[in-house]
Image (tube, rainbow, N blue to C red; front, top):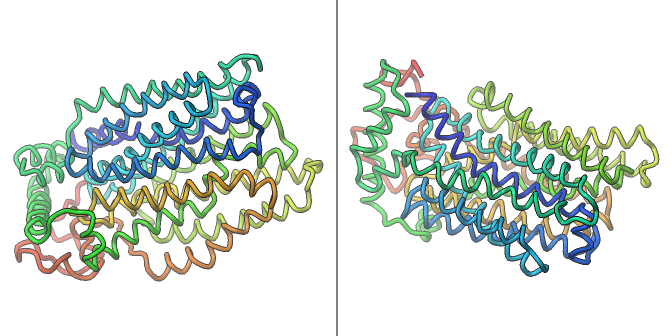
Length: 491
């Protein structure tokens, strides 16, 4: 079993992240459909389009928050299944829409589903992962988000070749999301629950069995028992000291601090401007003189470069370079790209200069590449790592719901009008935030969590949460975690 078993579980669970990417990206092509605009009596810069996009993110806010409840009470795996079932319902409503209200309700329901999955999938992957491969496994979530964007774009591009008098242009792309959602809902039935969740629910024998299947390689039985005992003692100590609730995240100072780290990394990710590009890139290409099916083709190519870059990063680098350095690189790199993009747009207001238009497209592509080696995979990884077990479900739900989706709602709603009225000046909103807020916060406040077990991350934030745990699991406060024989050096 071991590595391959763990990878297979995480990869399949990340179909939930694929739906995140697909559902987010599908509207890029849908709102560019002439039949869709005519059917719902709207235009490309109408607030109605902002509402259609933002209601999805609005539903995701509440979905993510409800994910905290389902994760703690029903488990990580079942939460993902619930999200998948709800997603099927939302897909049916959107594809069958006969008026705007039906479309909006479908988007809200699908957003709710994606919100649940966006909070549950990283937690599930993090709790399955070996400490030395956690960045890779949680990074799969971002990889599948990117793959979802790719598939949505090319499904949309193909559907756009249908007649402008046919609703197939937009109904088929919206219906297609029900396929992977159904596969996920059914398939997860045969996958295990997180060992930490099993211990939390006093199912220790099953937890140990699953932990062995996840990490055994024939030479590390001692390490697995050490890891099991550490997880067990940490969870028992936390349960003895506190009753799990939403309020405890805010009343215990150390846990409040760790919650804010998770929220901040999600807010900072949104303020890179990446989702403004993802949702409204066809408008950006129009400003560069690229319209119609050519814009959809460019959009399809854009959605490929991010996942390809992300794949390289999570396979070879994320668990070597850590978390802080990529975030610092991403903050500076994305900001510089947006500055260059703004300058190119200002010199080419009508998109008539073909050379400047190509350079503008290149900068948009480069933003995606830099994002994919920084905030893309790191945001999900860091968020899922910094929360202790007793607030991991609610904490990740809150960070995802508020830090990711609520901020997403704001920019989804205002961006069509901002791009139409401010044009290239709008990019400086994100540049200013990156340099004034994100850069100093990451540099001075964020912790380095690579290679450290989820239980040992307590030490990075000072003392153990709510006081000392039993002496038999206390460790040296060395954040680099020396390999002393008990650690698994064969993974």
